[in-house]
Image (cartoon, rainbow, N blue to C red; front, side, top):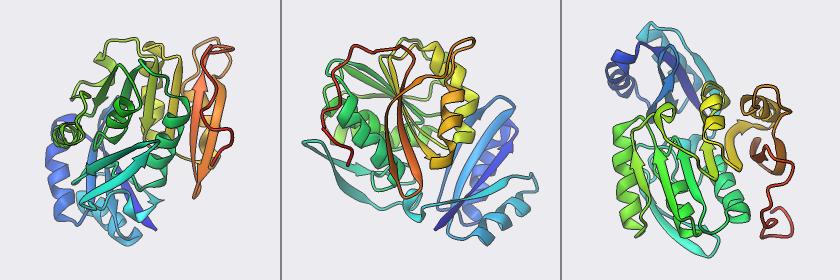
Length: 264
């Protein structure tokens, strides 16, 4: 088991605190948009190291468990996505394909992505989900991440796998829509503040992972449209305490059913 420290800092000091976290031994750090400033999510090999980093920064924060390979840079890895094989070098970005939440997103994309869809990958990290979307037949895929180094890594992975996926540092609040499918692989604390922006982009379906199995209801609430019932659960997969969900607002999406007869 690994650990992550989540720390809210002023938005003009994100780079400063990120650099300090590297000095304090993080195995990976991402800066996420937050209404009150910047939210840093940093991986550590032990709970004590994560807590020590928060104390050293003197800015408060929280520590939660996570699988240890989520942030450790594994070098170039090859992963299967349906009939396709991707080559991904995550470097210091999240999303090398081995972590359960990334795998859940990939497996649900294989089941539910319809050819010629427009796909948005929120918090793209290594770009693996946007790259996979293109391989699975999306007409176009955009991966966004406010960390410029993650975007650069994602662009490299897009080229390495010969796809035309695009990657930008545009905040989700400024992304024009709509998109037919949005994929989000992030912790529930990062998902909830951007739920309204996901709804604004009017996706027919949303694939979400990065949340623990007992947090599924919070995902639905985060994506609920004001005055509406919670989005309908189209599919669900669980792995090692994590959940992957496919949610839709309409009573019926009019889409083909899952490509696999059974959950795997």
